[in-house]
Each structure stands twice: as C-alpha cells, then as structure tokens.
Amino acid sequence: MRASSLSLIRACHTSFIFVKIDSRSNEPVQAMTFSSAPLGISEDFDVVVVGAGISGIGAAWHLQHQCPSKSFVVLESQDSFGGTWRTHRFPGIRSDSDLFTFGYGFKPWMGPPIATGAEILRYVKDVIVENALAKHIRYRHSIQSAAWSTEARRWQLEVIRVSSDGQSERVQFTASFLWMCQGYYRHAEGYTPEWLGMERFKGRLVHPQTWPDDLELDGKKVVVIGSGATAATLIPAIADQCAGVTMLQRSPTFYITGRNANDLADTLRQLDIPSEWTHEIVRRKVLFDQAAFIRRCATEPEAVRTDLLNGVRAALGSSFEAEVDKHFSPRYRPWQQRIAFVPNADLFKSIREGKATVVTDHIETFTERGIQLKSGQVLEADVVVSATGFNLSVLGDIRFSVDGQPLDFGETVTWRGAMFTGVPNMAWVFGYFRASWTLRADLVSALICRLLTHMDALGTRFVVPALRPQDDSMALKPWVDPENFNPGYLIRGVGLLPRQGSHAPWLHSQDYWTEKEELPVADLDDGTLVYR
Ligand SMILES: Cc1cc2nc3c(=O)[nH]c(=O)nc-3n(C[C@H](O)[C@H](O)[C@H](O)COP(=O)(O)OP(=O)(O)OC[C@H]3O[C@@H](n4cnc5c(N)ncnc54)[C@H](O)[C@@H]3O)c2cc1C
Image (cartoon, rainbow, N blue to C red; front, side, top):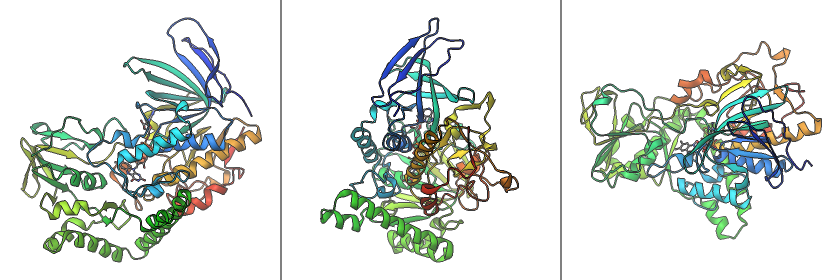
C-alpha cells in the first residue's frame, strides 16, 4: 500500500507550494515552495472527484472502501455538500423517487419513502460523518479547466478557491484520475424561456432553482409555468398561503399518486428486523415492482394511461371529471418522460379545494399584470414561477483539453455510459432518469474502483477507451434516445453530449435492470480499454 500520493508537479510561469498528501490521513506530509509571485497551492492526489452531491459523496465512500490506498479529494464549488438538494430551496422541495432506491445501497434509509430536501441533506451528512469523509472535501473550490497530459500521466486542474470571507484565489490540483460527479445542469441559474413582453411584467418572475429568500407569497396571485415534478411539489406547498395558484402548462404531465408510506418497510421495522436487511429487502421489492410497471408501460401503454388517469380522477373527485382528459392526459406514452409522483395526492387536494387551478394553453405575451394566453384568457399574477427546467451543463462547464487539444465532448463515444473515447483517466457519473439516479451512481462507482484496482495490478497509470476495428462501422446514436426519453433540456443540449454506439460496451442503455447484471462483471480486458 502506498502511504502517500505522488508529488509530481511542475512550476511553469507562476509559483506554487507543492504539497504531498498522505492517503490515509489526508494530511500534508511534505511541502515545497517555489518562490516568486503570484502565490498558489498545487496539491496532487490519485483521484480528484468533482462535486459533493449525491454522486460525489457516493464516489468518496466507494474510494474509501474499495480503494483504501488511494489518496483523493472532493472539490465542490458550493459552500457545503448536497448538490441538487442544497441548490433547490423552493417551498416543499422533496424527492419524487423513493429513498430506498434513491438512498445509497450501503446506507439504510429509515424514514418514509418520499423525503424532503432537508431530510436528504441530513442523510448525506450522516454518510459524511459516519465515514469521516469531511477531511476529503474542499468546499468553495470551483474547477475552471482540466488539462490532461499523457507525458505526465496527469490531469492538471485550475481551480478558483473562495475563502469564507469572500476572497478568491487561483490554485492548482493535479491527479492521476478525474472522477466527474458534477451532475447534469448548471446550478447557478435555471432555464427560463424568452417570452414576449416579459420586460413589461411588474410582478416578480422567479425560477425555483434560485428561489429568493425574501419572496412574499401571502395573499398573492401566483402562476406556476410548468407541470413537472417541481410544479407538482411547489403548488401544494404554497397553495394555502396564496390568494390562488394557477398551474399553467402547454401540455399535460403524467402523475401517479399514492401514500407516502411503504407497508413492507413498516412491517419489517415493526418486527425489529435489522435496518440493513430492511433497506435491502424493500429496495428489491420497489425495484421488482418498478420493473413490472415499466414492462407494462411498454407492452400496454394505453392500459397504463387509463390506470394513471383513473388515479387522478379518484384524487380529484367527480366534480372534476371533465378536466381530467383535457389537463392530465399527455400526448406522449407513459414513461417516455419521468412520471411525477404526487405523495398523498396533495396537488389534487389543492385543486379539489379550489386553492389551485390548472390551465392548458400557450403564452401569447406577458402583460404588466400577468400573462395573456393564446386563447385570449388573461391570468393575473403578482408572482410568476418559471418551473421550466434546467440548463444542461456538460462536464460542469469546465474547459477540458487533452494533450493541448480542446475536448469536444460531443465527438466522443461513451464506454458503458461512464468513460469516453479519447479522454484518458476520466469517468463521469450520470445516473438514471427513470429509476433513481443513485442506483447508477453506486454501480458506476463500484466499476471505477474496480478499474483503478485493475490498473494497479497491471502496473499502469493510463487508460483510455478506444473503438476497435470491428467497431468502426458501428452506427452512432445520441447519448439518450429522444424516442425513448425526451425532456426539453436534453433535447436542447443533445449535441453537447457524448454519443453511444449500437452494441456493448458502447451503449448507454439507461436501464438499471440490464446494467445491474453487466457492470459488476464488465470485462476490463476486452480490448475496448487501452492501457499504456
Ligand atoms: C428538484 C429536483 C428533484 C430531483 N429529484 C430526484 C429524485 O427524486 N430522484 C432522482 O433519481 N433524481 C432526482 N433529481 C435528479 C438529481 O439531480 C439527481 O438525482 C442527483 O441529486 C444528482 O446528484 P449529483 O451528485 O450527480 O449531481 P448534483 O446534485 O447536480 O451535484 C453536483 C455538484 O457538483 C458541483 N459542481 C458542478 N460543477 C462543478 C465545478 N466545475 N467545480 C466544482 N464543483 C462543481 C455542484 O456545485 C454540485 O454541488 C432531481 C433533480 C432536481 C433538480
């Protein structure tokens, strides 16, 4: 086992303090200062993990348990952990996946299936505390560029570090392996389309991703544009305090309703079954049920549509019968987009009680006092919430280069949805959309750790996926098949994302049930990974 990470750093035009890090304690063991200005610090690790969200903290746990001899650091631009669950602070923020599968495989979930943002943050914090991961995380470190040098066998990262009093400085990190856990959207700002007349609107226009602390909703007329999971979460959380909330959608979304409870989990807990067992058993049951549901969506989509709409009908009550087909029957097939879970039917309760209404129409223009629709109807609003999604951020908006050449990520082909042709020693965790994100984060993390261990056994410090001669004629497809899954942010940014091939290991199937069999036994010596 190596006691410390390699300290291979070259001072170029600026000066740096170079620090060697002990892999066990994560403490510096040796420092060398190269004089002259400006001052920066360069640290070297075996692995740099980008992002301290669900995926980055999961990566840290896997590294600690599967690769104990590796030194690693998690760099996070925000001032704390949690990623999505820290960024989003709108009222009612909660998961729409159950936490038995959205939670990690290694950390039992003890609460009801759907969790609030605060509960998820507490769960992630417990993982950090119980595994002493805090010493590996650097907050307020925003990676600007990543340059791979084959000669040095290292990534060199330019990072802006902001101190707690707001001072910023440029620092450097180098690493043998770069593990991207930066999620898929830009955290600083959400996606708001350009609507005619927006500048005339005298009320407040807000995005749920950047929810203002001072937003006053008491007695206000609110229009929420959009009907995805965010709108479905936000509306019941604010409906009681507002003068009225309108959910304005261009087209309907599928919803599924149910109690925020899991009977099997409750029974096992009552029987005092160890929490690890309960977590695993309930996880398997949830996944078993989901697999059956997905199969049904493929084989009898119309029957599933009828069932989902019947669920909405039951939740709304008979007086809303006429509304259901108009407002709740999407054009797409069930599962072509994520189905929003509405726990305890709270959105429908707000509608039933007359506190929320649904309008299906198109925006003609904003006016001073609200929104005029194509139908001519006018929605008066003091506050408009644009729950219109994300700006795709590919690789954390980091400028990448490989041996001096800028990286065009859209030109690469993915190896198992985790690594990329022409990009050495780098992996990306991109989770599932229709199953819980974390299921894939866990699978990919285990795969990367297995690869790092394999590289040590081979005595190599270089790995890159490369198409073989027999892959040359393979048809290339987008990262995610738009026929199969087509939310706006992916369609808008599909050209920026890597492509996938038509056969393994170049597929990115987004299918947990295939990958849970394939990834743990993926052949690392089949010629698609080149080691040098
Ligand atoms: C409101 C909302 C609800 C959701 N609910 C669910 C759900 O119920 N189930 C589900 O499966 N999925 C859900 N998702 C998807 C969700 O984003 C993922 O499940 C998961 O939280 C993503 O975790 P992550 O760590 O991969 O990425 P993120 O949560 O996006 O975290 C990435 C982190 O990387 C940091 N970072 C990015 N770039 C840089 C850089 N250049 N330098 C340093 N740090 C950087 C960011 O600051 C951030 O902290 C939801 C998403 C949203 C927005």
